[in-house]
Image 1 (cartoon, rainbow, N blue to C red):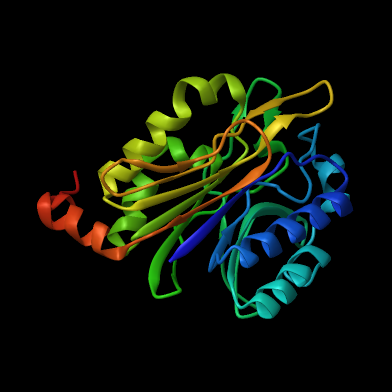
Image 2 (image 1 turned 45 degrees about the horizontal axis):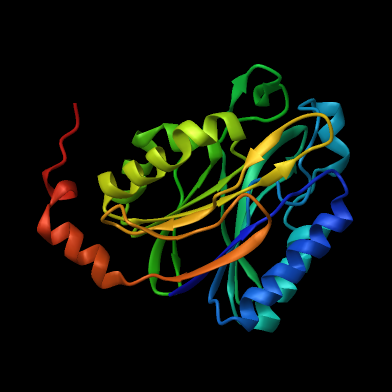
Length: 261
């Protein structure tokens, strides 16, 4: 499977963000990618984590963002993990990743672990999801996670036990914690679960607010960094090989030896 990881510097101009995402997905298709992965809140990255601020930019599967990406998925014949958007369901908002293939939504994942620290209080805006998500995609089992989920190995293990060979993390990881924790956490999740980790992060700085770490990457089941971006916007592409997952799991049968406590 040839995967493109799209590192964006999103802001609050939703239309501009969507145009950029569409352009990058099409570029990835031209470069031969079968799967494109977008970062967390790629279509609207709020400066203020307040419900009233985010609500006007919330949408569902039938909204402009997912509708546009469905069209691209169909036209380009590729799958897309639409990083995450602010999804509205009734009076609740969720931080949701939609998964698209052949022009249709084939699944979604709602962020389970909400980040509440300093000036960011996601629980004021979002309701939390309550289950893992593992989907059949392009002949592989693909798990989905979002940003802060990365600090909870139990979720990754749950997805691995559900058969995930590839686990996506769509993120808006900040620079300070990113420098210290981003790569160690990603490599640990890959090694622990003997799965590919596909991490798509936001990059750059919002106006007078947050600076995002970038360094999106692809990590193989042995913990090796296959591809890694820098701190600017861009696309990285790598090939995932199922035989590497199988080889790692045969060499050290972690999942077979796993015990619940």
